[in-house]
Structures are given as structure tokens and as C-alpha cells.
Amino acid sequence: MENKEKKGNAFTNNPIVKAVGAQKIVVLLAVILLYVVFFVMSSSFRQYTTLVSLLDSSYYIGFMAIGVTFCLITGGVDLSIGTGMICYALMGAFCIVKLGMPVGVGMLICVVAGIIFGFFNGFLVAILNLPPFIATLCTMMITRGLGSIFTGGLSIAWPSSSTPQGWFRTIFKINTSGVLLPIGIVFLVLAVVIMSLVLNKTRPGRYIIAIGSNKEALRLSGVNVVKWQWLAYVISGFFTGLAAIAYAGVLSSSVAPGSGAGLELNAIGAAIIGGTSMNGGSGTVVGTLLGVLIMSLLNIGLPNIGLQANWQQIITGLVLILAISLDVFKNKKLARA
Image (cartoon, rainbow, N blue to C red; front, side, top):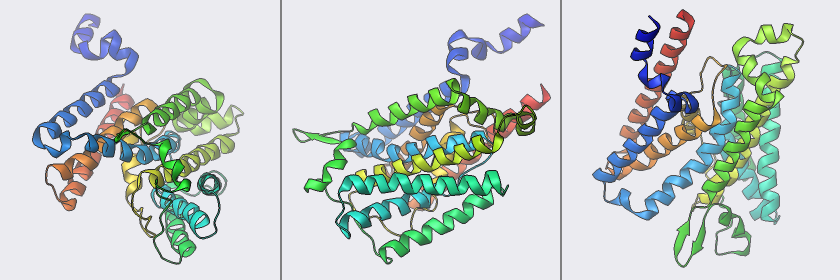
């Protein structure tokens, strides 16, 4: 029986697959396959500028996805990250452009605003015991309206790279002899490494995982569940603030108030595709990064093969349905085991 089981699970029993994770390998292969398909089907996709655009979109989706991974692992969710990112970017731009503050202060405002709203979401979920879906949906509406109020309903742009205040854009890409180097990927990967260590090698990370696995058992063991569940939403808020900086850093046009709804699905979808369970208790930040690459490839690749925006949304939605279905199937299989 044991030998038969090993033969039937040759892929999952492989030492490399065990070390890396079966889902990560499958998602990585999907990333490569998608890239090859778009590369073959579209001449415009083969251009270097398209690769830069692909990485540009991965920065703000990636930072949001890293943060929301922690919420999902607790068994919760943060739906406010999309509109929150736009709101914080508008706040920062307003302080820089209208109030004459240094761009560094505007960036700090993005992060502080993200932490404040993360703290607020944590209060609603961990203290008031509101369902995370409802609590963060309300915060989504608040941030969407607050961003518009801040700028009087007008779009506002961060300083361009040609101005002295535009130095912050070099965090994400620099121009070397006319060639744009997307160095922002270094900071995204660094964030993934750091938060992977936090999740897997620190007490807060282990408690956050344990909350999603069995919240009541953790509470009965004497752990302050409220504090660590609250922390997950603060982390999400912090990374949404970083996403706002990344969004402003790669966006050549103005930040539009009232936008951002739906962007949270890219980040949540990336985390789920990367192996984070919607039921909580499991997930990896590295897997989330691979999911981010899938979402960025879809966002950039589908327009390059001539698909209209409506078709892009349909295909992205179908991919998310597939990812969620696989998560449900995996959880049912584990429950039967």
C-alpha cells in the first residue's frame, strides 16, 4: 500500500517538490507558460518597455498582496486595500503639491495613513468582532470617499521625474543611457524575504498562522489572540501605504479620486493563486509573489494580444474562480484525510 501511494504521488514525493512546495512549482510553471504564450502571440509584448510595464504593475499589486496575505492567513480579508492605496496616494500628493511639503513627507504620510486605517480595520475585526468582509468593505467606502474629499474631487499628480521632487521615482526605475532599469523589483523581493521570515520564523508570524488554524484553541492556550489578529491588519495597512508610494512612483498620469475599487481583487487573487487558503491557517509570502506575477502578466499581456477591457475582466475573473475552486478542493481533501 505504501509503495503504491508513493508511485501514485511521484510529483509530490519528489524531494525538490517537497522542499519548494507543489503549488509554488505549478504556479511558477504557469508564469513561464503565460509569458511564452504572450511572447509568441504579440510582437508588442516582446518589447523591453512591456517588461518594464509588467514589473511596474507588480510593485503596487505585490505590496498590497504581501499585506493581505497576513489577513487571509488569519481567516479574514482586507477589501479596503485598493481604494485605500488610491486614498493614501491622493493624501500624499495633496500635501506635496498643494501644501508644498517635501516628497519624503508625502511618502511618509502614505505609510502613516495606511497604518492608521490598518489599525482601524484591526479594531473593527479583533475588538468589535465584526466579520472581516463587512468591516473592510465599510472601510473601502470610507477611503474611497475620503480621497475625493481631500482633493476636492480633482485628480492630482505626484512630481514628475524631470523635477527635483521627482527623485522618489528612481526607487522603482532609473534611466541609464536611455534604458530604464526596473530596480523596484529588488525592493519587492526584499520585502518578500523579510515578511517570509516574519511569518515563518517569528512568534507573531506563528501566532497569525495559528489564529487561522484554530483561533479558539490558541485563545485557550493563553495567547492574546486579539493582539496578533489586530497586527495582521496593521501589516496590511502598512504595505498598502507602500503600495500607494509604488503606484505614484510608476504612474505617469494623475491619481484619480474615486478609483481603486477592484484593485484589491488583484492582490487577494495573487495571494490565493500563490497558495494562501481563504479558510486561513496556511499561506506563504513567496507563493504570493508568484501569484502577483500571474496577475501582472494577465493585466499587461491580455491587452497586448488585442483583448478589450471587458474580456480582460472576464478572463481574470475565471482565473480567480479556478484558484478559489482549487483552494476549496484542497481544503475538502485535507478534511477527509
